[in-house]
Image (cartoon, rainbow, N blue to C red; front, side, top):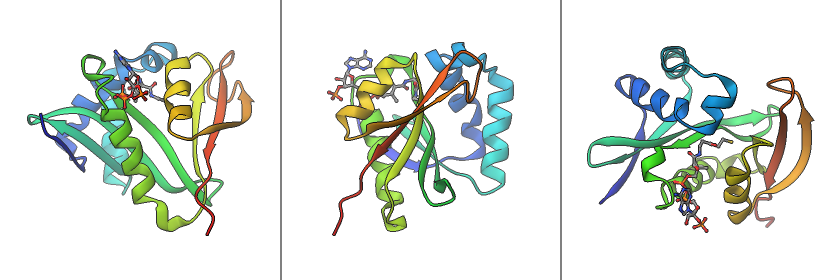
Length: 156
Ligand SMILES: CC(C)(COP(=O)(O)OP(=O)(O)OC[C@H]1O[C@@H](n2cnc3c(N)ncnc32)[C@H](O)[C@@H]1OP(=O)(O)O)[C@@H](O)C(=O)NCCC(=O)NCCS
């Protein structure tokens, strides 16, 4: 089935929130669907850059990015999530590629944080060229270490 990447709309907020809340990060961080939908809606309303992957008219996943969200300098992947029932079919790879494509003019390395318990996501990022660059113990939640991962942009 055809995968379409398009900007998120306000009407997607609930579907996107449901996808995150059903994931391991939703469980570990105690995300609630209503609060997450409100957070995504607010982000969108205030100019946040969020795009969704759509399959057959339904939201299959999404990514929230910030052009210079890392150290006010480099592209930052704030959040990426794919519907549990649709994982392993390349949707995450397509969203990650879109993040890199949309931010390539920034001209700096791509950055993200991933929680230490999220081994599947760490492996996913490593397969796509990201390497561990540092650790932030207790950064988002006490007892959870955030791993800073960076993908070097090709140097000219
Ligand atoms: C990380 C995540 C976005 C990847 O999305 P995805 O659509 O599964 O990604 P892809 O299909 O492109 O790649 C998944 C890889 O795992 C493999 N895989 C196979 N079966 C799988 C399954 N049932 N579930 C997940 N991955 C599977 C795929 O073959 C693929 O391997 P490859 O990279 O060697 O091709 C997704 O797992 C997710 O939403 N996780 C929960 C939210 C999260 O943790 N986000 C990251 C926060 S930092």
